[in-house]
Length: 178
Image 1 (cartoon, helix red, strand yellow):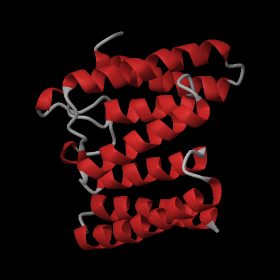
Image 2: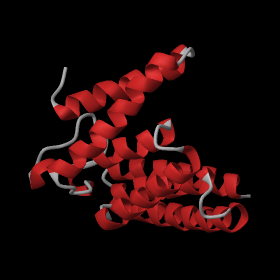
Image 3: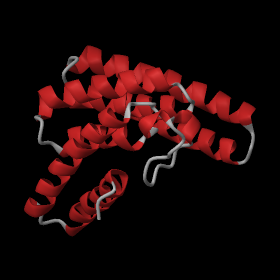
Image 4: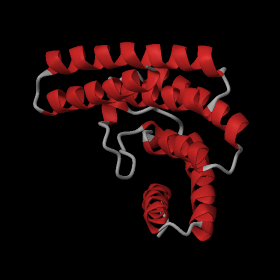
């Protein structure tokens, strides 16, 4: 049931994003609220059934963070990402791709230096950024970059290696590296 609700929430969030892109703020807001309600149900169900330190709980938190970021709820997004990071570090270890994705999100969804810069290849508007300090964002980017570089070297699946390489390029652009 949680997987079905999660899939429905993903579709509602996408519908909200489409409505927002088309300038229909009312429809976007409605879809986002519906998605948030489902994500909350998924999060609570997974935590109840699997325990608070399960990777599936972290995935639900990550999804809620992405939605909160889209809605401009910066503090909520940052809190959910930090909770997802804590769970993933406990459950999967500090060198996991899943934890690196959270670090990348914390960096790439940020406005650095408190200014108007947008993160590299961010699909979210600057108004929905996390407003981390430049130092915090760069620390998250470096942590993610180190893990993705390590994972690329040991990966035999070219599709997975390609996804990691894309994230490496985004993080290097964010950090001003080539």
